[in-house]
Amino acid sequence: MPKRSASSPSNRATSKPGKPSSSISSQSFPTQSTAGNLILILGDQLDHQNPLLRNANRQRDVICMAEVHREATHVWCHKSRLVFFFSAMRHFAEELRGQGFQVWYHQLGEDPKKDLADSLGGTLRAACKELAPARVLMLEAGDHRVQTELSKACQEISLPLDVHDDPHYLLPQSQFRTWAGDKKNLVLEHFYRWMRKRYEVLLDDKKQPVGGDWNFDSDNRKTFGKSGPTDIAETPRFTPDTITRQVIDMVSKRFTKHPGSIESFDLPVTRKDALLALKAFIKERLSKFGDYQDAMWEGAEELNHSRLSPMLNIHLLNPREAIAAAEEAYHSGRAPLNSVEGFIRQILGWREFIRGIYWMNMPRYESMNYFAADGKLPQFFWDGKTEMKCVADSMRLVVNKAYAHHIQRLMVLGLLAQMLGVDPLEFHQWHMAMYSDAIDWVSLPNTVGMSQFADGGIVGTKPYCATGAYIDRMSNYCKSCRFDPKVAVGDTACPFTTLYWDFLDRNLPKIENNQRLKFQLTALKNKDDKFIREVRIKAKELMKVWKVQ
Image 1: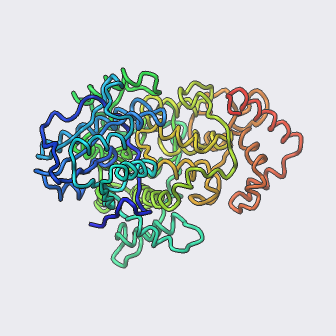
Image 2: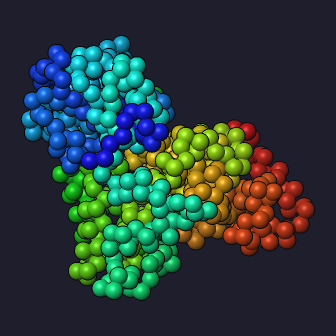
Image 3: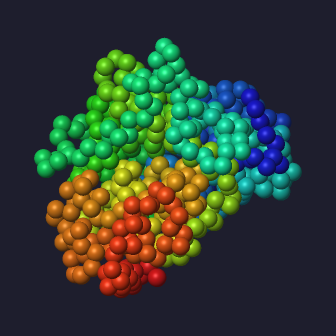
């Protein structure tokens, strides 16, 4: 199994939710110097196939897991996100104990004064002081900040740290770098086709794409029409058990002022339930996922989306089994190719692609700000209180479920933040706080890169910008909204339409040579000076009212 020393420049870090409290494992185990290893498991590494666990000496090695206050508060974490991580971690620790592992688990309680330490690094030092291990072993983390902190903690106590590749992902970071080579631009579609060939996914006997095409995205843009969504199977709901109820109680009391609701928490927090969620999606919703994956509808929940990303991102699900299940559904005739290909592209293509982008560009990626945006997020990004129906409904899901599907994230909430000129790092931190599936490696390229175009084109080739007409076409939001998506100025002007023209005008020097914006920029140049002046005034009014600037 490949590994790197703590001093290696390719070491990584993981964003973990949690904070240490007074409660440590009730299981007894040696606390004197046993020359065994301390195996650190982070909150997004809940995988029983972890090679460090398979190779562990259960008599001498100790598994270390910790809930840490700073990881719950470095961004203003949604209560549901905290419950999801903490409950999944506690369930995983109990499963390990049941398998005969010695587990040192630091658990948060209601009283911060009883915490062992404030940070992951401090908690790791405390664990090492108590257990006196020969060395610390871990899989590479999912957050550059966390990996740096843990490496520093081990250096401070002169304890070796072995950082191993995480085999949960299909492609090791070194192999992504090899693929990237000296390419001037890294294009997702090229990477995706390469991955399809490499892992022989959806290929025919001649190693060509089944159906004759690599990508069926053009078939995946249907709307629900006037009748709305019909015959959509309900996403499985998982009733909180005793452990989850204990976590809900702790989070409710300790993190009272944090955003979001946990009244309807229903996510899978165990491997068993995550597999049930995958099975239900493949059987009941995958067949219509492709056609309607970009559609929105007021009052709906997950629609035909899987909502599997939280379980994938903390490793309760393996991407290989999700890909295999979808591919088998196609070959058995249970799901059409456009749905299966679209689902697989998100996992085999996009998920692996942005992880590679993250590690190739950290830590500089976090500070990228192509448009020099410095605005503040409006308050309705936290509470959803706004007259804009599309934003209010998207935020309803975020507040209640720590969830919104990809079009609501990108083309409603992300689009609005970009056109308002919100600081991209602040938008990323909001995204990290408010979504249960957010981990730094996946959140940062999606927000700073794809959503806000703050990386100047590393992830995408153009900024995603659109008027309210896009939202009107893909949803029923505008039908009952007081704002008119066709109007840019005046009392009924749709803020998206106003800000679209203001965004293009304001950032013209940065985008005028982007060929993929040629149509939009031609339309801008055809607008008269009076229209542009009125748009600028209206946009400034919105930014003032929403306290953006």
